[in-house]
Length: 155
Image 1: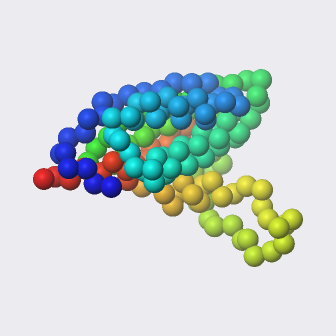
Image 2: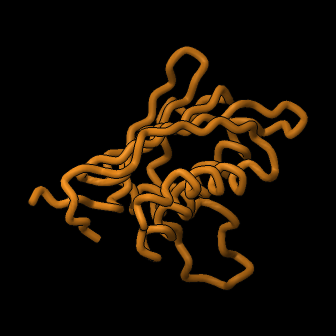
């Protein structure tokens, strides 16, 4: 949804949490506290929640696979006329082949018992996010993306 104001009311902010079973829930609560002034529509809120929950759950499960060795997760957020810009970083294991997964659609034309358990997350992230990039810098994974929510007009 396009907003009439040419400038965002959102000040850039950052969130830092540690991985663990409640990391996604904790980060999303903090993120939405910071996004209150954008007054996102229900669909926009769902888009942000879905993409960030998938990303955070992937970090907890794959970047920090040992639950006894949690690590930091950092989210930087700012708003521009073209949407919400996020940078998500962690100090966990790198992504395979130092690339974000392609997120190809999964085959679902079979018996329910044969459906894959995972593999849908990156498809959703890539489908919903814009300008997605991944870098491994030193010992840090960094994903940057834009979500087309809270769009501003240039009137």
